[in-house]
Length: 68
Image 1: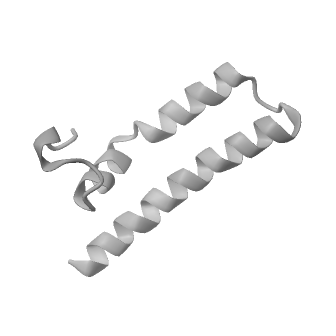
Image 2: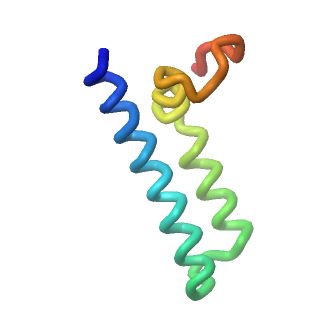
Image 3: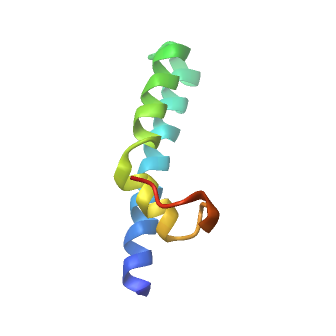
């Protein structure tokens, strides 16, 4: 079970790093418009495998239900 959580944690960290890179690019030189950055962040953060990993490690309340 621990290996499963570690794998989920790594997946979550990778997605967060993607969002951080988008933010950095936007703030450093405006490579992306704010609207583009928000759309890309939403796309990354709404991926089913990410939501499932976050649920599995306890990021969401058990009452929230399992993400599909």
